[in-house]
Image (cartoon, rainbow, N blue to C red; front, side, top):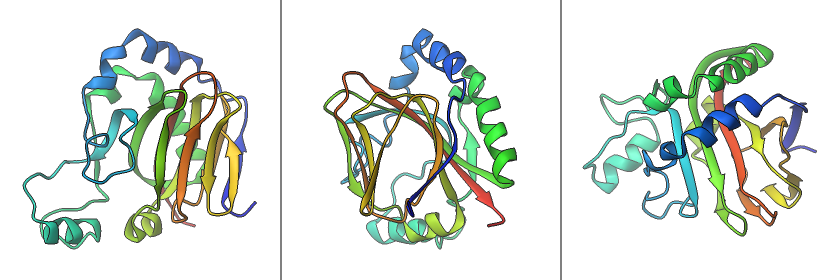
Length: 193
């Protein structure tokens, strides 16, 4: 496979999933991705753990400059801790272990996405600036056969406890044809490559 590389299976994600199940309100604290104009995440719920500060009131031209990390005064690579990262402290050890395993130099976005059965993240490719700077990893917190991630001309099942890299510069999408929610933690890490 050229668009995926598995780093681990059997990762103990139970403490984090239990913490999430105890705090279902966290799914509704931040709807930025779900309501992003023309975004691919309309059918997801997201818990933001780390993300750049949100910039509002920009013109379309300024948004494009921001995406290319060329908007004066803003660094789209600088992610900050959101309140949920303190609440879900069980996530921190998973993230830091992954950082150590891949020789991470800078931690970027960290978010937990949930897709209901029959739901999807629509096909898209992440911005070239983002994919050149950060490497994208997933830790699957809850996934059953039928929760499919496609990237380019390849696809995998996203199964509980798997940790993998994938090439998010490729057009990719998630289709949850499983019998239950698919919950995955996305982690962007700057590595020495």
